[in-house]
Image (cartoon, rainbow, N blue to C red):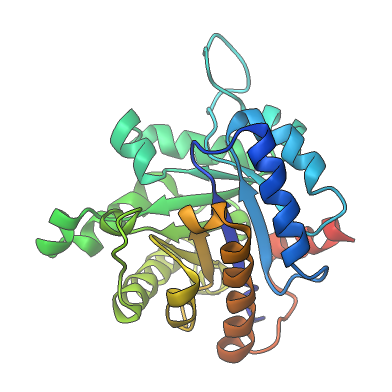
Length: 276
C-alpha cells in the first residue's frame, strides 16, 4: 500500500472579517514554501469562501467549508448546498463537527445524507468524531466514536474522498490535549472500524487527522503516531506562523514515520492532478 499523504486543515470557525482574513492569508503565503510537504486546506466561514479562494489561487492550498446541507436546492434559509460550495471553489467540507452536533443537534441520518451529498458533488469530506470528557471518564470512548462512524459512513461511499478527524470534545479550545498514546489508541480503533466498513485496503489508505488544541509545541508528538495522518487545527490556524509551523512539522513526521510519499489513494491522486 502506498504511504498516506499527510493532511492539515485549518478550521477558522466563526472568526475573521474579510480584512483580517486577507492579512492572515498574506502571512500564510509568506510563511509556507511553494511546494507543500503535506496537503493543506483552510476552512473559513461561508462569507469568506469565494474571496479566500481568490487569495489562494496559484498556490497548493485548498479551500474547505465548515458545513453543508444535504439537498441540492430548495427552501432552506441560511443553508448552502454542496454544489454551491463546489462553485465557490471548495475542495473539502467539514461534516459532523462536535459544535454542529452540540449546538445544532446534528446526528444520525442527517450526517449520512450530508456526507452522501457532498461526495456526490465531488467534494472531499472531513468527517469529525469524538467523545466528551464525561464519556471518556466513563470509558465510553470507543463506543461513542464507533457509533459516530457507523451513523454516517457506509460501504457504498468513495472511501478515498473521506478523511476522518478525531477530535476529543474535551480537548477542543480547552488547552487540554490527548496524549500521543491516547490519540494513537483511538486512531487505530477508527482505522479498524473503517476496515469493517470499507475493507482493510481502503481503510489503510484513508487519512485520520487529530484535532483538539493542536499547537506547534505538541504537533510533533501527536503526528509522530503511526495512525495520525495530520491535523484539523482550530485556534492555531488563525495565526499564520503557528499554522505554517504545524504544516512543517506534519511534513517532517510524515517523512520520518510513514516513509516517502507514494501514489496515494484515488482522492489524493486527484488532488495532485488539480495542483498541476
